[in-house]
Length: 464
Image 1 (cartoon, rainbow, N blue to C red):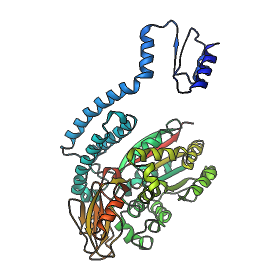
Image 2: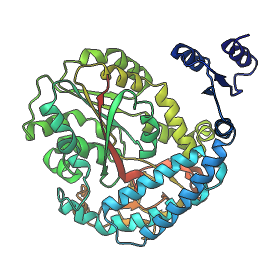
Image 3: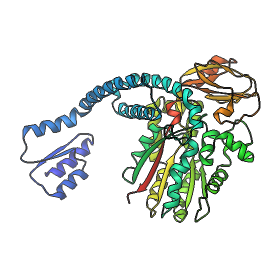
Image 4: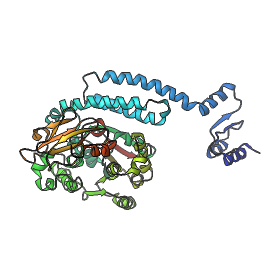
């Protein structure tokens, strides 16, 4: 019995047994056949004992050895990050810290056996405590100095900074995807499915406050702050106070007005699509090739936001995604089998196509309740509220008495806003313990945290 036949028989008995082939042959065809037969490694004679030892270590001890090195490297980084948190940091320092923490999240997902996940969770909690203080101290200054290189890029700048240049200079279609409620860690998991198809460039920006769809996404599409939208286009801002979907009915109109204000001329009509369920997504995947001559198309994908809100009320989703690691895994599983990945692949086949991907805000796993007092007319959101006579401990939230300073709609003389910090969520005194328990350990957005505010902007061009 030959080597390849032996390999096949072993795999038939137990496909998980690692097999190393040792042979004199250097023929490429044999190597290809062995790889196709899922060989674990391939050694060409003559071999020395150290080669065999190395292969055995790689197959039997690699996870243990790499885990030991991961533990050593993280503990070194832990000390560096802890010292950084004591410094006077700027927005780019915070982006770097968040990137480090996210990368360690992903690394410890692979090496959960080394038992450092709780240490990292505690460090992220401490980082968010300092980040919330940083944002509270500097946010109004950022709003007053938008465009200054010493302040972060904010939501209203995204189109001008990352999209317009492609619209004006591209020889092919430009697609702008906004994945509602996408976190940086989720994107890092998703992009592993794209690195063989696209050249990927990553940049980062800060969401405006509140980190909620009616504010951040309208701002993103309009190139304006919420108070400016209300003043300039009151007919596109008015409506209900609280429903995210109905308050984002006019994204295409806001985007068209931005293009008109900036004198951005399109060769074809502006196209806009909102994917709110799988059927719409599959239909778009099927028909996206019809847009290969479209100059510019904006696409909003709502799945991740629906997942966040659905998990709050679904015991099944809580069981499937009990923690952040599982939440990342669930996102990755969805993306691998989604129409969105299929759509990206079809766009990759279009000549000179460009894809810009971003999000309006992220989300955070909330663990601590903050008691809030307010009248019956106050908004119902768990991470931010506006209304009359709102009261909350200022350790848990920013209290905004002058919405104008934060470029938020004033909604009336006596209306104030509160925005949750860190991992707090708002609970009214009525049935306090019931709602404290119900919403604890859910993913929410609207407040101040690295996960909600520090967001990716990705530019992708096809490798095909």
